[in-house]
Length: 589
Image 1: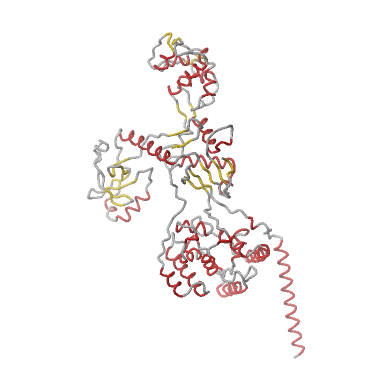
Image 2: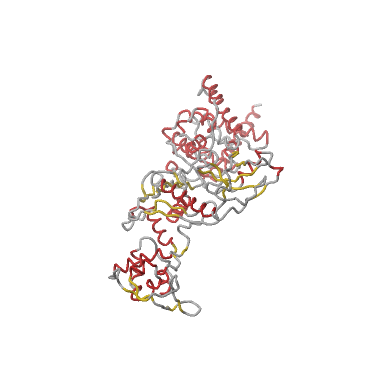
């Protein structure tokens, strides 16, 4: 009997030694792959790039991760309790891993053959979110445990909790509880009640599947589970628990909603930031304050669209954009879903004509005013099922259509060059081409005042005589010459400068080298509005004097745009834009 006891004891000792050797060997093998965690407390969390107007109105946001960092030392007590109840009730007591949780996960694996529970503590989740992948393997779990131990040795519990609260993914591009509170409830985390905090605390298990925007019922079930855990742990008394369960949840989408429409401006600012900071522009929390004034931008949007629509309406209605069969007109719910799937542009909404003559849009039934009141649509014979665009004006809803013509609008401060309003087209989602910066066009006679102003600056007077006579310049044309003409096709002989400007005479502007040669370089230097596209050959420069050359407005406007973002930082330019870092410091201003 004694001998048997000795054999058993020796076997147990050998087994223990073997397990120890295996553990030491595994640790030495895995330890080479463990990253350093001493800088974890100073980790920079990704924050999106945000664009604002000069008066603080939101324009756009760029970046994969929405984040509103919370101060680790000032987290709401109820939020901490909800997180502990949902994820790690023993957080303040364990060394980074919870033995009980790991045993339950191992038992679940043995019983079902599936790794349904990971037994991860908050510290282990921090290790995984910052350093590891999400694959379910024993090696990753071992690394997670070892990293959690290291993190616990280097950081305080409050620091670890702060990292978790600001890093965890909670669905719909919301990372961290600060961003989730504003996304789902439109309020800061500290202003949420306990039921709302419990709902957020229940999201980490399946944030994409169980968030309230995708599956409200499942989100409420997880909320009730977290509230039950809070009650069981003593965080909520019986009355508080009942009130929280009875709370009517109001979660919805309250993301970064633009306050003014300036998509072409946002794209300019985004490109400017990426050019200087690379992909870090999307992650470092920069805030770009442009020189756009919200009131002027709204007026520019309205003016351009009103003008384009008026021009297009004068050319008549081109017909419906589609037609639905009569069998689909009875189910209004499905019909509205179909209408919501159709493209919209600016203030135009798709609507369908029903069998009774009324119209239904995605927003609901509408009453359409007489489509022939301004002769627009007078020849159209409407049929049930016709799908058309409608817009809302001062006199109610009216028939509309997408303009086939495009345009642009730019407003500048003459003294500084700061852009206060910019619209690059009728609708950014319809066409992202920025006609204010990228389009080439002939400026026409609007450029001639600069030619004549430069002439006056170099000694000419309004009474100076210039011969309006035929001229020819060597050019890259089929016959080797460029022969400019006046609009009338006539020649007027000696003409005073004032008369040439009043009558917009092309030949006076380009007709003699002694007139144009010294002037165009000065116009390019002194001109505040545009800079000619650089092209070889003197005859090309002369075409600009006649207004027939091609101009790339962006060659000048792009510099104005960039400088108005930079503000006063360069070359004495007096814009007023700025770029602020995530910590609030002004990087450029």
